[in-house]
Image (cartoon, rainbow, N blue to C red; front, side, top):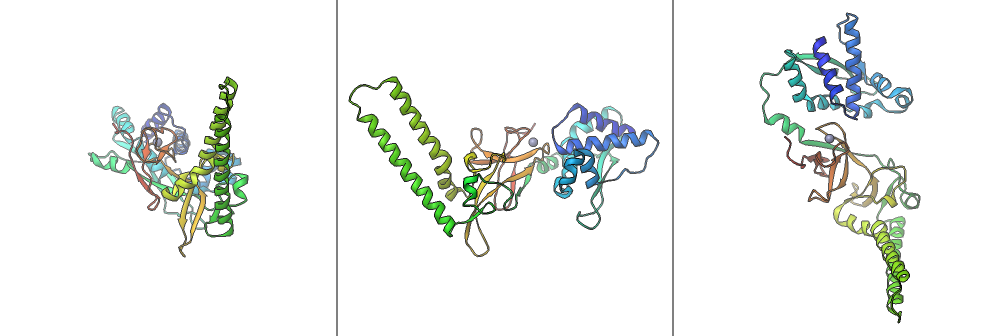
Length: 325
Ligand SMILES: [Zn+2]
């Protein structure tokens, strides 16, 4: 068992990843080996909160919810993603067992807390070729709760807790201000074009530069404040422009949804998932330039190789990146 654990530790050290699952496993295997060197062989069980405190330190450990920090299946999926490299290593070392993650049935909350420990199992006889690929090509998305994603201060005036009922006075206010803004922008553009065209002498370089700057400003304002609302009506979910979200947020989406009474709402949310290939964080990003879909899930560790489709209704996606070798 000690040699199997050593193989796992070597694999983790030789192929590091900047992910939570990697850090947790590294801690667990280190602790397990230290115990075994003292001659103790019974399972070394860690509760979720013990793992959180040991891996993230006291400061973060006391303010984070262990249940959301370590979702069920995260460690298992990470080990699965490393399975072929690990099996290779074990076979070369002449081992006939492989490391596995064991858990109790604790659901978290007030009852028994979910706990994890490392164990060994016999090497699989023959792995079916299609099975791991099918498992590795599906992803589940999560949506943040209302109010978790902070809009910019201007949007906070209209969006209460990050949400807005479209048919309310706030919704109408937003619609009116968008239409008014577009009207102003159009007028400003026309006046600008007219003032340039009414010049009777040739353009100087300075006038040309100021015209270019003016056109750029109009384009920027259209792109970041007005065009997104138009796309939102058709697409239901769009990437929120950075001008509309708080500076502290790295990524967020705007979503239109219906409540149980059929009323339409617009809200700031963030969709994310765990990459089935490397357990990195998957966030929604534009499909351009390598994908046809407008919005896809991209893994932050490998944004152009680990790419997934996004189905907002089923909260699932399938692998659509370049073929896996
Ligand atoms: Zn990934």
